[in-house]
Image 1 (cartoon, rainbow, N blue to C red):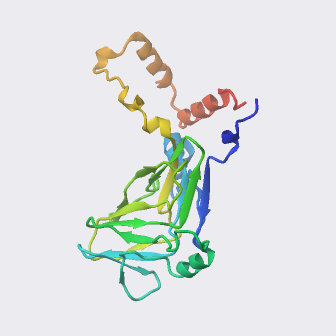
Image 2 (tube, one colour):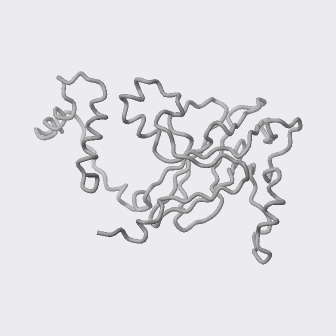
Image 3 (cartoon, rainbow, N blue to C red):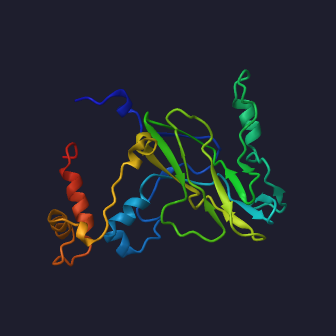
Length: 254
């Protein structure tokens, strides 16, 4: 059976607009080599979550500093701090002006940094546009399982990128005042994850059941639990092996 035209399309298409910026890339099961070897070899839940999606990087090395009221920024190699009110990536305005069609209403480039009115919040656009297959949205979040410092956190958001085509941004909450925070092109800024719109936008999430106490487990439940957690199996990586076996047994994977 041939695939439909929608299924033949890439699940996600990236448009990387900033020159010399790192390209989005598939997220890494090894956390860019930082995951302990034992976890990498045997902890399938950890590696699967780490690799779910794509990394998006800062377009340049830059720094942010928050004084408790205002947010300031500078390129990593610059000396002067400037307000991060609506910052266009240095050098991008001329390139944009020479590229945008003359009759297009979008004659001003979208800012790379945009401090919000809310205290300590700033939007960051890494120069990426995204388009997904119909029925799929994009979850923007911090990189899964990469160690995070106390300086900032990435607020998560879901964008319906199958129809909404605009700058893929996320909001950063700064958590420290008075200390410069470095954002490096060597470290992912966001992780993008595909989610089916029908999964989160329907009432199915309201359709759940809660059973409480050991008495709620029937004989079939106890048998299933015993089969899943074999007390006589002591080898590491049993779950990972079971996952691979189950995947290979599914229709279409043979």
